[in-house]
Image 1 (tube, rainbow, N blue to C red):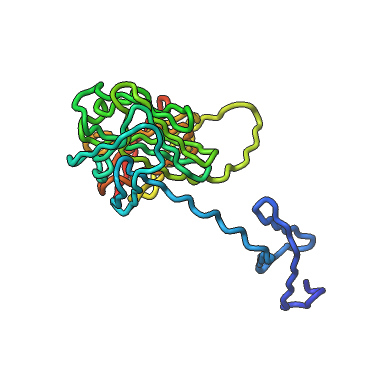
Image 2: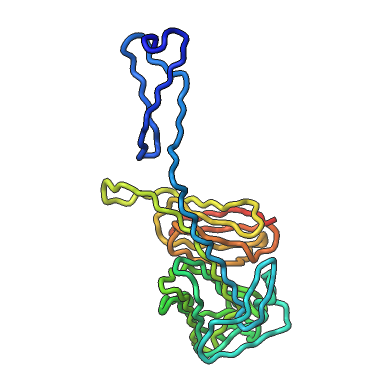
Length: 301
């Protein structure tokens, strides 16, 4: 340095570096005395801006068998996109175990009918809403539900056996749509199949991190679950880490231990969005995978 600038005089050296692994490495080695550095400045070259993200895919909510509704700040569309012989029925009785009773007070029912709902191809969390507002005993109504042309999600489904009369119950599933149409088919086992509401929420997927496989073995890690944000205002996200990769069962309970929602998640790596329909309060989320069991508490403001 003294040879180039003399003593007590600044010297700046600049280089063009191409980074491919996400880390800039600089190594100093001495020839005489000690190597030294006073400051490092790293400036990016002007690069074209990244392309804008694709437009967000909106959630879809359909009040099956009923008119358009706005509840808890959420818009439910009037019944649409159905086919097959079916009918509508409604009740003036308030439905319990929910903050969106008007959705459960109407229904579309029939021996065999279906919905073909236009969506952007991708993965969705589909929630089906039910309430028995007609029958008063177990076994009076049994039906099956298939999604995407044959994937059975509910078999011999008995609403009254699960919740009794005029009490809400819902079931959620992860569905992969490849043809731009979400198909849901309802078929009767006894009496009439029915549905009170359909919610379709897009799942946000993150890019998979590349992994080098050294040996063909499965490394098991303890099951971990995160609920964020906590507390939450609209909905929270359940993310799973570790475990054995098998499907998980999620049960959401209130402080009395009553199960409000049961969700089976076939792919634990995908995020799960929960809680939009819950009123403010404390809830407990139980996550089960094989013999492992986790319970977490979460507060809705």
